[in-house]
Image (tube, rainbow, N blue to C red; front, side, top):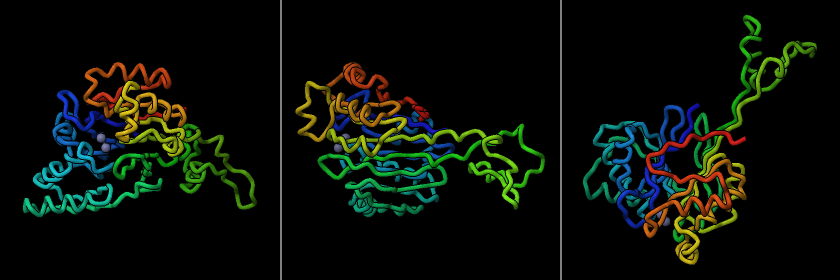
Length: 307
Ligand SMILES: [Zn+2]
Ligand SMILES: [Zn+2]
């Protein structure tokens, strides 16, 4: 199953040429999901040759403009493009009001339903699920209500070893074996052992998105063992006091969360425009958590099992 994250924007609030505000595209098999939607996100989707019409759901972390100002443009374009499919939207209280008023005064009737769910940004709970994965909120410590999102695959079934299967094996037997159950006859004798006929299921993979937030050790608890972690790193250590005052994190704080959570890999982004180069962020984070990478815009990161 394809499971990846495309970085559309990894800048922070102050505009800067060459960087874009926060937005990521999560792809699972043939379905796409948007995480945050900073200004101009629809243009980045075009650049990446991603058809926005396929978006199933949009997750907005908080109502600072650099995380959702692109939403009205994107939804308007979906409407112009003739979308009729339902769209699921998750975000803090007030987002629906903002959109409704924009559509009201631009006299835009929507041709597709938007199902809006308010996120409770104070607790971690399951917000969404489909056939393949669940999404849990991650409470973050920011100036306004803010939640990150943890995408976790549902456990896979064991894999049948095709060469070993007996011809015309009943479907029910196959189901039992895939579920890790032995097949017994009516007297309770072993007919087929699941260990002989199947291989262990691949471990479920997970991705966590944490932006924006002050350093908060509870985050590591929410994302324990995550395979790929995106954590904001707005400032380097020289501006640690600003990070605290503005409810953001430093690079080392992001790395500490990754280390405490025993994450497989860390991506850092949401860099302040005060820093023209991002090399300092990387070396700083790697001094604590070596498996760190820059959330480079336009880059696709595969979500891979880390164990
Ligand atoms: Zn931000
Ligand atoms: Zn913010």
